[in-house]
Image 1 (spheres, rainbow, N blue to C red):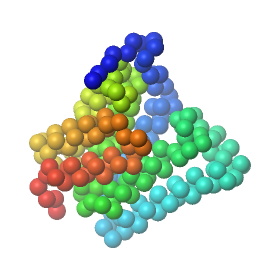
Image 2: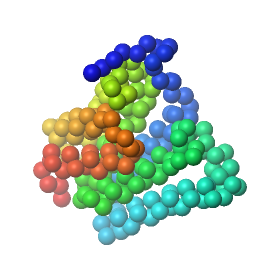
Image 3: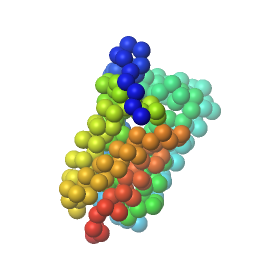
Image 4: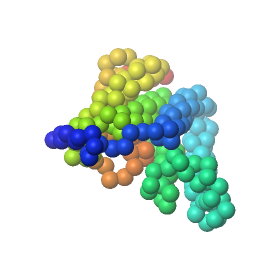
Length: 207
């Protein structure tokens, strides 16, 4: 069921500079990670992604245990953090975890597709949902964000090696549905692996 919210009371705040910066980093990280998953030697790829995740975890621990490091971290990145991230785990760490899960579960080509499609689709949904979202599902996600997710995910999927239009549409549409689901934990953890699995099911085998 979709409910319509008015522009004053129900809509989320419009994204400003920090949110745009956050999502630009999200997209660039997804594209870079997808390229690494696709081009790096297969034997090294899991270690690269696990290493990146462990570095992110180490930074999380350092900012909690060291007041000096915590202040430096907040000064550098605090403006881009969501309220819950100031005391909890940041989206960068959960994103690194999701990328690592995709690489460990999937062949490189499908891991790359999931990382790129999931990252770009999620960023588009968040920005459009915050700026334009008026028609919201019970989950709090918006129809406008879902449409942005689909139309960003489709070209992102279609340009990936070996991807034809039909499986690209299936991958983008399913990624959009998954992004709209009311999952109780960070979708950074599972959207990339899920999008990769969908692409794997929708496509002919890649080299």
